[in-house]
Image 1: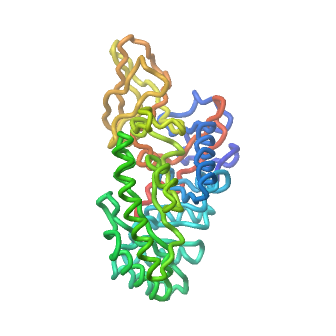
Image 2: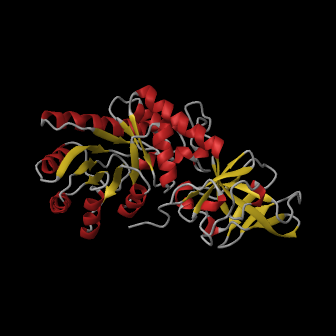
Image 3: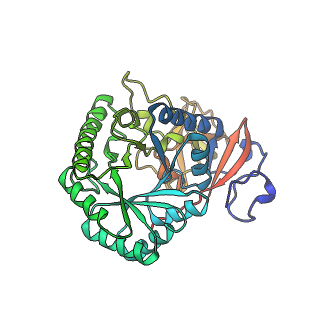
Length: 384
């Protein structure tokens, strides 16, 4: 399903929180709303950066899980394609019109590998690998399907998750891939995920500099074996300016920059200020549903409306009230001056945007106080 820009396109009964043209105040809550002006600015800022540096941006769709947003990033932000984390997510995004996708994760289940090969019939398909046996399985599936699957060798450059050690283990895997039918060695995946939310600028910079050096040395070793990297990919919203200026990485994989969240507001730049080039564009739209206590209010955005793994949401544009705790269906808001009343609307900046998006069916695009568009969360709940 594509973006909805007129009410006649709405799917009746599909949990739709808004109608095109209605006032924002009338959107059913809780809902996920996008400030379209801020969103478009964020896309442009990243697009200008990659153009200036002469690199590529493979925008990470795990943030938004939306084909419409992915296509906007490609058309207006210069993205070369997208990253997805799961085969099902990639299938949905390709179904939505994207033709260049990296599954920036390992795919080892044989049925999932078969689906990955099927995806390669419809779009450029790239996958990360860190295991010799996995290479054999990918090759067999690609040959059977009559397709080519591109492979990136993943380096564990500090996140402590997937990936082999830098240097010779990467060379060994790359040589294996290059020698297998149905596969192409396309480069390196080197995403330092643990550094993205390190608040201190210098600590974050040091972690990325370590990763960059590991990648630089590995690329040099690969060249001695006549193995060229079309893609040296990684980087996220918290570190892209380091990798982007490294002259080593040539593909950024930023995702959260389009929305931003409360935890990214704690990540500092070199001047000790919050990262300021991107604006908050994503909000949980919530209503006050109970006001029986003078010093607090209860809203309808609780645990089921958001992810709080990175902390509680922050109320946007307000210092007089504070979101202080939540249960399944309720959010508790401190209201010391007894300002809030029933049905008051608040914009919450989610603590962590990616998993928050995964609990909604729709994005409601707002401009000048009106609903301008509705975007389905195309890959909502697709986790296999």
